Image (cartoon, rainbow, N blue to C red; front, side, top):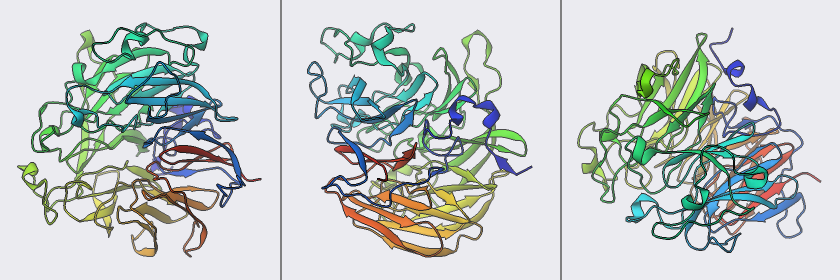
Length: 489
């Protein structure tokens, strides 16, 4: 029996082979898809190998997810799809997988009072996680929501009946939901219930384990970037997927040492025949937790049991971390990407925060049994990447615009490839190809393997923040303004 295996028996609904209902390979978060026959390139002008293209807003940081004939992607409201929704909003669009037309959308007003709570025009940055006829999402307002994948087409279901109130900005009357609006089944406001402090924009890809949702809360610094307003706030919580009840939290006192915010989503694998939750905090630490077994009685909030923790940057300062906010030479580390488990190893990329931190980052390989480091590989100044592990190699990007390919067992470099613009997106491997895009709109496809070979290189004139995904024989590429569905002719 392998050291690490995915807990497939616990998650039967999400195991649809052709769909991509959650970001990354099932629960381990490895950015490898099983699709075959994908195009190596496409022509934006002639639409060769383009199945369809859908207009988005003007900022799209959410990686598209596909399930049940629907495509889910977050964006902003700069190009309103419904005339009653005008102004800056976070938007989750649900599109028809066949032709890209809009089925419905969740439209969420911005958080009021301080732009640093919900940065202007950023939109809906989180990824949806789809589980049967339900979609789960963290909104730009720091809310965990459960949505009916059919929208309001089959009526207003669930205990939440306040969609009209929810979509109206503060001080304005409730709106009347229409056929293009989302059906919210339940909602948990993490600001109120968990005491978090939102910063810049929520980013979370919710992990499902049985009846439980594991959610990174997005809590972080305030507008000074030097103060944690909610030092007792949790970084990782557990929510009942059926009711939205707040069940459990970490108790690792992470919040006071968060350098910027909590943007890394959790992962799951079986280690030595038991499921383990892996989570990277905004303090540069990686944690292993036991999954929640039984909720606490009387609606009390349980505490997750820590198995071990790993320090990505042990030489970094551990106290008064915000003293280093504008220091590019020294300071603490942060982790943006997800922890990935593959072939009995855990891979974590991180380092000095891309906006405020020192110019140093690494990809670390860790033993998932005990959190002991196996090897370390230097990356560029900063990284926001999640790793892709395939056929004995590991691929990861950095914010200097370099794709790194290295040996999975030793961490030794195989090759690098520099592109035009920094990477916010991660590499995605499918059909023997590495797909990736940069913040300057450079889209590239390379052959996966120990020999570097460029198959496609396009300048799309629109920044790319989202990671490429693939499902049902189609590659999905989200630029800031368009979602391209690419299929080989």
